Amino acid sequence: MNASRAPHGATAIFRVVTGNFLEMYDFMVYGFYATAIGHAFFPSGNAFASLMMSLATFGAGFLMRPVGALVLGGYIDRHGRRKGLIVTLGLMSAGVLLIAFVPGYATIGVLAPVLVLVGRLLQGFSAGAELGGVSVYLAEIAKPGQRGFYVAWQSASQQVAVVFAAALGVVLHSLFAEEMMDRWGWRIPFFIGSLIVPLIFLIRRSLEETPEFAARHAPDTRQILASLRANARLIMAGVGMVMMTTVSFYLITAYMPTYGRAELKLGELQSLLVTGCIGLSNFIWLPVMGALSDRVGRKPLLVVAAIGTLLSVWPALQWLVSAPSFTRLLLVGEWLSLLYGMYNGAMVVALTELMPVDVRTTSFSLAYSLATATMGGFTPVMCTWLIHVTGSRAAPALWLSLAALIGLGSSLSLFRRAGSTATLSRRSG
Image (cartoon, rainbow, N blue to C red; front, side, top):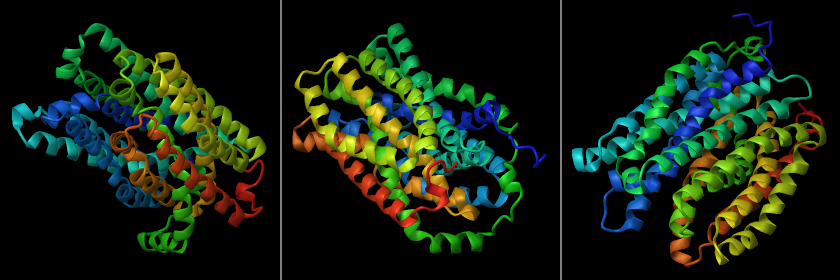
């Protein structure tokens, strides 16, 4: 592999983010069809209990992310970005294939939910380092002054998965009756995901190693663990900064179809259309805000987005639930999409700049995975639970407000600690 030639540009970005697309596509499909999956694998006389078990299994996959961040992130920091990203893709694909072909509870009994759980845990393990590996790769191949723009495509690729999954859902619901979709039609998106796997393997195998990694000494396991211990406070502050973005993302994408159907009593098609529109606007906002952070710095966008969320999310959801409609759900979703794009466009690149170079993938992945495991991944189940215990359909705003408050405090703390150092200064990239 020619380490002297920097693999930057649109082709390099496309090659690395394809696996990120598959990861998010799988998570989105599960979130979209959580109710049907609950009926198939977690039968119960109580619809709420069945949905909660399905959503809890969705969240359980996130518990494996910190483990994957340590194991696979360490592998990437030792053996290279290219090799590590191929390994994460292989594990991720196994998880996708498993859930696609597992028979329902009526066919194999208790083994069905066990295998589904194994699939989610395996997918979560691989995802623990996938996002960090992609983000670090993009940061290390970015052209001078464009790091925020490059890294933003990691999150933007996830939005393509959201739009694709939502569009596929719209097509399927126009072709099949609701009863048929609940019975077996929900499996079709998982089968399609399985067919995409070989193509993504071919694309990712063509990746080149980043010159920055090739030019430095790779740490061994002992050195990685020592560096993680020395930077534990920095990593934990990074966890807090990530919480805002991961809760916001899963609220406005993975949970949106379930929220629209189960709580607002809107049609499945309407909820999926809103989710697709949100994914499309996220795709636009993320690179725009990433590029803006290259010009004005990361901190202003982080602060404005977090404060904007704190001030507006409760009134917005109260307005929505006072008279639920497709138009109101779309408007609220697009407003939250703007705030999410602003925050995430600056946050991901800032996190890559904060982390120690020798363990950049491991520490980034660990911070992101811990935030996702403790708050983000459980957003659908927590929102469902909050609505149930408070009796308010606007209760998801409480969960997002808590994440925004933590994100704001952590961001201010990190920038205060960093002071005016080059990594987080204006035009840092």
